[in-house]
Image (tube, rainbow, N blue to C red; front, side, top):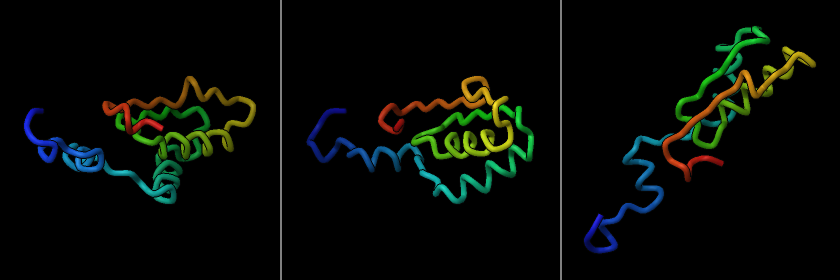
Length: 87
């Protein structure tokens, strides 16, 4: 982008332009419990993981369900186009 500094989106404005939204942990917990539905070997993909709130919630639920059978690195996946969103 060229032009005056005001023409360059700031970090927060860039998020809004891309439709970025960060989910409150309580809502992520609720949705993950519903999606996993007591399946200890469920696989979870968050294609727009941002700060990872859904992935962390999935890890907690799966850890509770699977116990020592847990293989998070084979069950929980996340990607995001915006590197600055990744925490």
